[in-house]
Length: 223
Image (cartoon, rainbow, N blue to C red; front, side, top):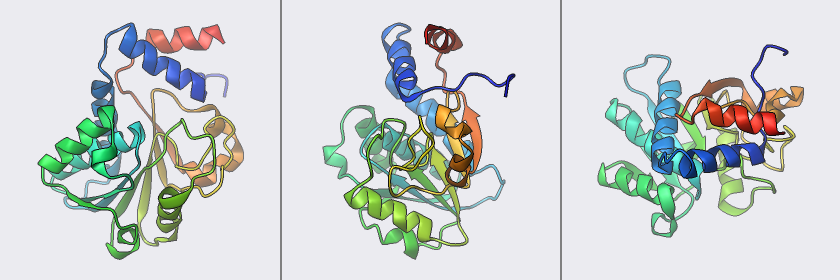
């Protein structure tokens, strides 16, 4: 553990994003695009030429990562469908941008949570909640998490944090996705070191999204 890079808390993640955008001038949508490429790489890592992939997208930036990853997977020839838990016309910011692009690219969309069990998917991508979640999932989000966990013979890849997991404590807040792989952005999260978190994160892959390391080091040293 001594040689491992410091983990990030929820607040530190927010600081990294804010400084990358406000101080370094890196557009948030570019960070999101980089995250999506890394997520798509992890989904396709097995080398199968054509996977059946369901990407479950929430309302925030984690969902934006999912919409963009769906586009990249589609470009690589995989059969992709998106389950939107928030109507696209109600999305805002970078997430709305990525969702609109996905629609224009002709990626299939549904708002029916039952699609989770009905599709015969090879991979389900959990892009419902990210590091910002601090209360139990409710409504459609909770139903989607439970549906993902009920699917058998299907790999589950989580974007940044398994939805429903508190990234600071490593404890489930309620319903929580049980991922096979978690592609976490910038640095691993503090809660991932809690032994019990492994049943939700699966294998953790740390993905670079282009946030300058100087930011991360400065924020970690300030704590």
